[in-house]
Image (cartoon, rainbow over all chains, first blue to last red; front, side, top):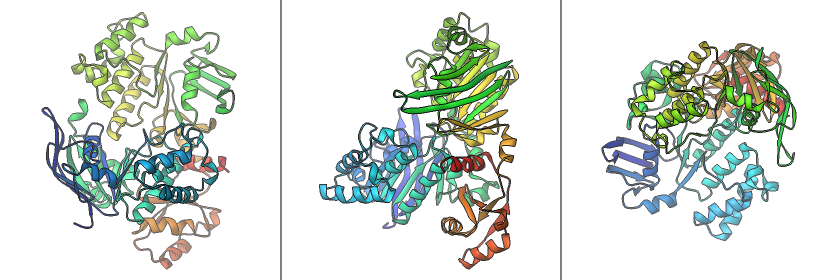
Amino acid sequence: MDNIAIKADKLTKRFDDFVAVDAITFDVKQGEIFGFVGANGAGKTTAMRILCGLSKPTSGSAFVAGFDVYKDAEKIKKNIGYMSQKFSLYEDLTVMENITFYAGIYGLSNKEIKERGAELLDRLGIKNEAKTFVASLPLGWKQKLAFSVAVIHQPKIVFLDEPTGGVDPVTRRQFWDLIYEASDRGITVFVTTHYMDEAEYCGRVSVMVDGRIDAFDTPANLKKRFEVDSMNEVFYQLARGAKRKAD
Amino acid sequence: MNAITLDNITKTYNKGSILAVDKATFEVAEGETFGLIGPDGAGKTSIFRVLTTLLLPEGGHATVAGFDVVKQYEKIRNCIGYMPGRFSLYQDLTVEENLYFFATIFNTTIEENYELIRDIYVQIEPFKTRRAGKLSGGMKQKLALCCALIHKPVVLFLDEPTTGVDAVSRVEFWEMLKRLKHQGITILVSTPYMDEAALCDRIALIEGGKILSIDTPSDTMKKYPGKLFAVKAANMHQLLKDLRSYDGTRSCFTFGDAMHLSFKEDTYADVGNLTSYLSGKGHQHLEIAEIPAGIEDYFIRITEKANG
């Protein structure tokens, strides 16, 4: 159990008679980069909200960083980081103000905020931009800053919800360098994406279709099983059969 | 006649301090599907807003369907369809009400141009009494396309229609565009997904407000200078580090399950030398093959240059 970061067993979420998440079972190892892909409406967001302690499941079980999603949602929130493409940083705060704000929310002391903030600025090479408003940073810097802020409290797990949508090709790849570094430091990375080339970079990938996990394995094994050359084709074969997309 | 022309169009924000579009010049022929390919912040949306007469350019001239974007904006508004990047229909009207609303605004009826939208509309017709705000992403996108088409526009502007849309729905969306093209509609479409570029007749690559390249997708790929290799090994993360520190490496980036490697000079492009270097680093299951460059390879190459 020690080296398991997330464990879900027949996890289910219903909204009235609609089964958004349908008895999904999977586990994510500590330090693993886990790709969570699926078509629009497949149930990814609902499942992710449960794992982040923001929503209670209807049935089944799930443990995140060893904590029960039914009983210990608050403890889960303290042990995870979260970042999405849609919302991550406050544009009208400066770089340092964003760092201070998030680190404070995550419960770091003033001393820790100062130390880790300086270390973060140093690592990203943006010391001179500490007092710059986030709005005027290039998109690539914003992405890297958002990610670094999401892990400033050294969480066991970081959830990344489509972190690279719309980002230029070079920045998109540099972002994955950060993901690998975090993984090397032992942080578990749970990431969703619509770029199927990025699914290839994950240790293991689960593909959700109509609320179910229809495939769950390493990219190499999935490609072998579906007899195709790319994750894009694996995804296409699985998601093409989805019934829910018409809804 | 060209359906769209831009001649040195410049657009700035914040009293000139932010240069969003820098002397953009290109033409789109009648009936052509033309793609603006670039990341967020490249200036794509600003170009769309100038052409759809929602923003005034600071410099240059542009025409749509032969009309000037500044002097004849009312004529342009009557004959174009525009699907902005952000969902802009009325969330509290139903599917049917939204469509009826847009038809009426343009002095037409749903019946009159039903042929044009039929293929797309039948997919959302079962939900025609549902409020637009309650539709899924893919359904919203189809309704927005129907509303942009209902007055039979001469030119269709689609600003990032597939952003945030899954791979299967993206394929379906491009199938719809292909059918519209056969009806003779000129389409200007933008996307951050490089793989979609191949589906356009011609593409412009754009970054930092500048148009960097205009060509057909296949000619764009042919412009890649020098040789390009795909390299695979058991430990890909280590492979990236080792390839980047190799003497002859110009650049190396991950592309799905392989590294794409280019050399400073093609004289370094010696598979034997590279193989022994990587084997010496302990790499196993090495695969090295010369490959043709894709649009994303070319985009990375020219933006690297642009960034110095």
